Amino acid sequence: MSTMDARPGEKVRDVRVTRDLLTVDLLDGRTISVPLAWYPRLLKATATQRANWKVCGGGFGIHWPDVDEDLSVEGLLRGAPASRRNVATT
Image (tube, rainbow, N blue to C red; front, side, top):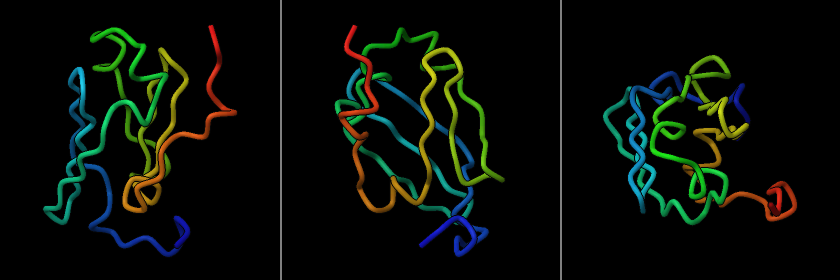
């Protein structure tokens, strides 16, 4: 499924990030929760950086400008962790 095939209810309503978990609420009432360890940039980020997120991609994505991380609802629904090659090793 591409963003063009996404359903309107799959748009991001809210995002919460804890020390261990990324939780995304969708407009259709579903909640997606995934281990934060899947996204090393977010895992290494401070609580303030994690809290600074914006909806992007027409509502089907999430962007964290402070850590340059972008996630799509499509990827979250597929259970796709971040690509290892896209993670800076600092």
